[in-house]
Length: 273
Image: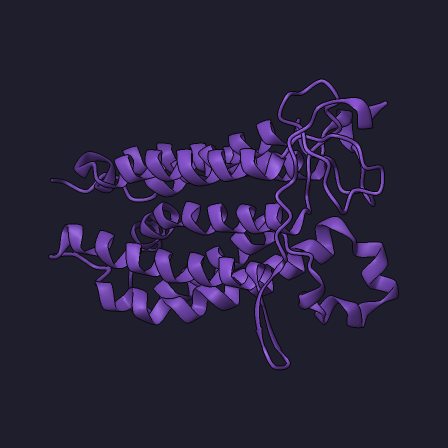
């Protein structure tokens, strides 16, 4: 039945960007690289908005390694704990095989927040001011990550036989038309959220409320993820959870609450202009 319906052809792209001898470079790795490099450069520019205050641009040079470690360790640990713990209890060594996939944004976020806290504590920097700048650049990495998910044909959407722009993903065992939910996430979590935070971080009034931009990121991402999860196929090993919600939705609810707290805190701890 589904095969007879018109669908948008999935743009088959080799997940391997290029190979040099035995060295294979995948689009997913390039997405991470682009996210870190462009995000770092963007942070340098934002740090110059208040040249007379810390953090200074060079402090983001030093933080880049911390961000990479926090993202990868946190993302992998979050996936193991939140999405497939029974499997990894039986196969603990597989948790180290990150090249087979399996990263959690929420885990990566906790990893980066931990890195921010430790780095700022060692340097004597306000983690709220520092975190605002990091939050403003985060959608860059999210955008490239979701595009890489799309290229890999993974984390696809729910079946949508009547949707004009549905696609049949090669990795789908059912081979039915589905929402290209990776593109929805790239648009909301990447493009839209980046624009909103770019406006916020350039507002002197909001920059003088430490933690506000970080709070707006948590609220924006949490709401975007909750919405897109209604179109995204749940992880097969989990399915639907409490009250029909997905794991992504349940993990995003505390993000929204934390974001609201940060915004309210920023109003109470505003820096005099």
